[in-house]
Image (cartoon, rainbow, N blue to C red; front, side, top):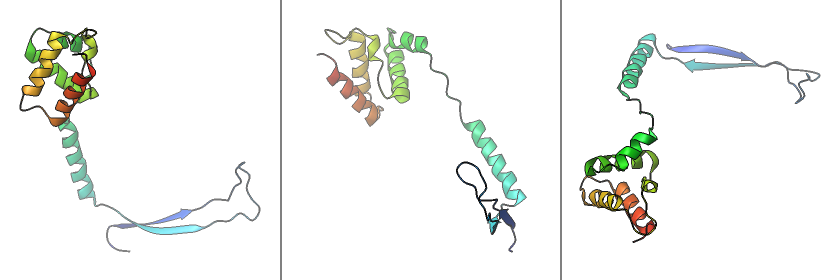
Length: 139
């Protein structure tokens, strides 16, 4: 055996039927294998790295419907735009259901979609979502 390995012997028990009864002439077999291990120093370094990574990951805040609704229906264009982007990143759709779009597109919704289209920092997925939304809604 080389350095950094562990010798493991596994013992198989009696062979059983699906009902759980032991068969006549049951057998035992020893299975032997060599498993590589990590050194204690490597394990400690790995744990520390993982701990730092876990601290760095921000916990996603819980979805708040009322907060999203207030932001999406806000008169401020930038607030609406930010809420639409956050909603799209979470659910891959837009909160168009908040607006009355039966006869025509709501003015605030249309304004927000135009702001998203005209913004050069808008991702291609977001642009595709806006285009799909506009084709789905009445003119």
